[in-house]
Length: 75
Image 1: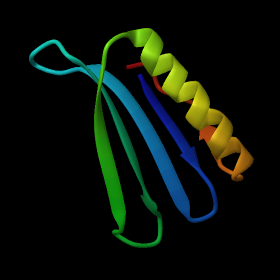
Image 2 (image 1 turned 30 degrees about the vertical axis):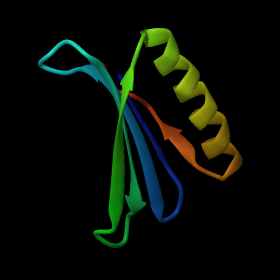
Image 3 (image 1 turned 90 degrees about the vertical axis):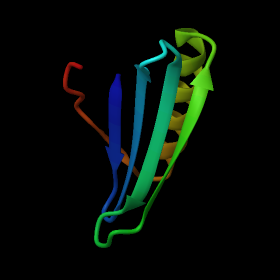
Image 4 (image 1 turned 45 degrees about the horizontal axis):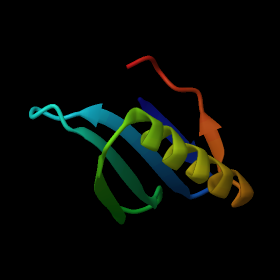
């Protein structure tokens, strides 16, 4: 799963995937579109339902902050 949000000069992405060990990982990345400033975090998840909860929380926060969601490509 890959989700992307953007506003005029910032972006935020969430990716949920299994790593080589089979662990479920949620990676969040964010930054400024006009510079190379960016950050990221990785979170080990216990279930896909936990990922859905985190995504729903961030979706609401970002929409309230003026971000819009990009259509996701199938992954």
